[in-house]
Image (cartoon, rainbow, N blue to C red; front, side):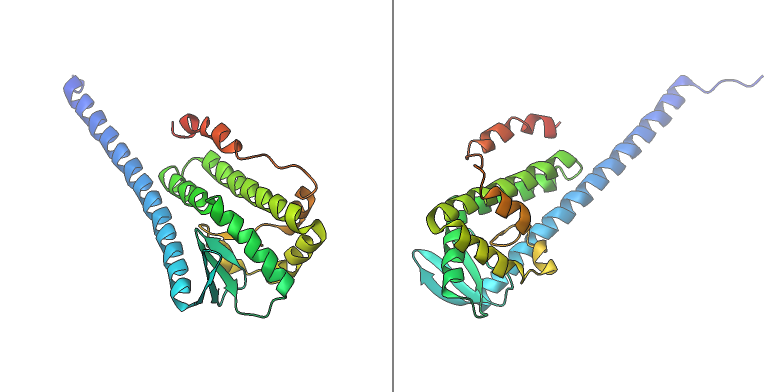
Length: 212
């Protein structure tokens, strides 16, 4: 007669298998976190490198850096602009645009969402919130500049800078760029009223859901 396995032995084997699966899942999670944090550090190093290489100019309390970048962008109070020839009108609009990003701490929004994606990289809803955050910040900034400079002047600047787009630049997820997002939805949005800053508080209500 074949005796059945002892219950304690079967239970021990199931426990060991459960531990192995948990360890595998934890390892996969940590690898994902490490990959995203590595990307954040890489972006920060790129920004710091451009800061040290660029020619520095003080501009109304901001640090303006002339450097080799095809797209102007900002990171907190640092405004990076191409050394290539730009019209006076375009430069004026660019600096106005990026200074608004700086004043409203949009770089902090981007940084916080990148950290959130690192912690919850497996949750697709985090990427949706991150995209909506960037879109809303860009639309709000576009609207403010348009109200001050006019749609025609601002649209011309967007088109001029949009022609200099660089695929490699899109890897800098931490920065706010004058022409990072697609031009068509931004131009269409200029005639609409964007949502105000209260959207951020409404998005906070989703945090308990995405952290589960």
